[in-house]
Length: 293
Image (cartoon, rainbow, N blue to C red):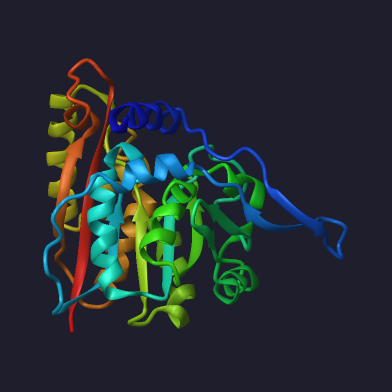
């Protein structure tokens, strides 16, 4: 059953599909739609299958995650669970979740005020932080585009399970968002960045390659990441990763706090996980930037 569900997730997420409509609450004062929540991306049965795919969790009692990189392709469930379990021990109150705008629709940086439906209840959006970004023109509100984006919607159920009290700030970035725009966004978020906040870059890596080709691309990408080589990372296309801008958000935040190294929790690809050398793969990294407590 688990393998069948993962195959379904592979088809769904590689095609860029997610929720298709918004849950409407009422008409707002401006005549528009006041949105209460985005529809769920997975069922209870699917969530249970994802949660069953677990790895052993290392002890990190003396460290605090400042930022992290996590897949949004649910074939990588065991990597996602592993990082989520480490986060759960830390109990952050706010997750800034930054991912690609796969459809490349709307404005360059998009956020929203709506909550997210999951099998275990709503993931609440942190409205003060979102309103701060909107007020300062650092992001645009676009609930419709956001509701379709699996880089946010696929992780919402896992965040609800592992961090039931945490709120999120969802952000999706156009393909050509620059490093300067990432820096400006982080500067605008600074009032909300404290020991209870973690920024997660929701990023998948190489796409549509053989297993061996994917591993080769990942080695090259890892080298650039270890060097904090932003110009090289921003030159990489979809055969390396799906959003250099989303990826570098976690790197730049760590750098701002004096952290110039990360820990690789996991790296694999869907060909390995599904034991299929014929499939077009997606590859995955989970990375964490630790600050000593």
